[in-house]
Length: 497
Image (tube, rainbow, N blue to C red; front, top):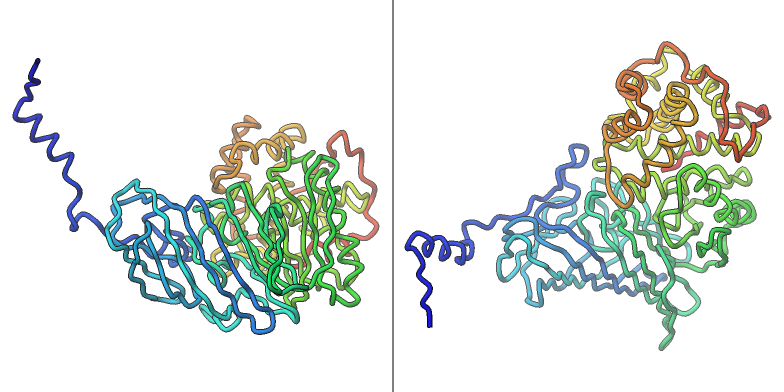
């Protein structure tokens, strides 16, 4: 036998390492994730990897009951943590033990676990809750849309608070299982693929799964009476579309537009690379809102998007976001240009494809249509401020910046940038600065001055973005002259997210 001898100093060090942190070493997680636009959004101290939502919804009363199970890991020694949530909570458990909880601020649920949580700990959080989502407001508004036959959760930059507890910021993306029981005759639509449908005692349960990281605002739920269509894109992606049965005169135009989802997604893949998810589709509930939203794999469209007839352009916009916004998400809300400028530019490329005006012609028109003293030019797309996050300038001036980039680096480098970026940051987060660096690395050109002019100066640039002859990708051919520049501009000004 050999006895191992340990020097006194080494023994003391090993004992110190074995001693757990004292209570004084643990601290509450921050009530915000650190976004300067929305300081109270998201939370610190943990990272969620998966949400399991088991829900029951009664359309006649707008009552939602649920149990949310969050799988997370702590990022600090944690004594307490927050969730973003508005409904009424009856119980919280952390790693199986009952936890105390309280509400604070506009939308904070403060959870204190029975035992503090060391950094790096795997955590299971179970929240039981209920409430009427349409009765809840925060900061004077609601993101829950009541419909004649149900309700819808869809908004940006916040929507989750009204139907599930979360770490509500794009920096904390996770996978999802969403299982919803609704009265027989109603349907529940959510993101991803439909895993199962089962009925019992007058209720039908729909179970959906999103198997790729998804930002909380991109999670959606719609309950109502829908006409549902299914299919498969030419590239093999399953498609589920849903239309409220009571859309009235907008029904035909909505369906004529959204049924082209597979075609549009395959076309966008020529520019942006392979579609990043395993499901496609869209849905149109009977809401009175005016916007569309890129909810992951299954965009939300309001009926008003189709009030003037078919609107494939808005489908292009929301599907472009599946690459630019959903797969590659903003690191902070000031980076919104890398969502909206690119989705708008995709609409301009679609106009080229359809022979209704090249991206260059539309850029020239947009640039010329606003004089230098128009307040439009004072909005800086690269950092517009929370009050201007969805200002038209972020979309149109943001697309002008891309046309300027295209003319500066040439089509070969430009389209290599468009296709390479979603691969470089797939299923992650990025900033405007990251894009500038990437564009410089691909093109081999210094581009800081160009982006400063188009994204950060609060004035109209001295020269239009589009000066060279526009050349579409070889597979697309040369676009025809526009039928009506004003019509194109009006279509592209429809409010989308």
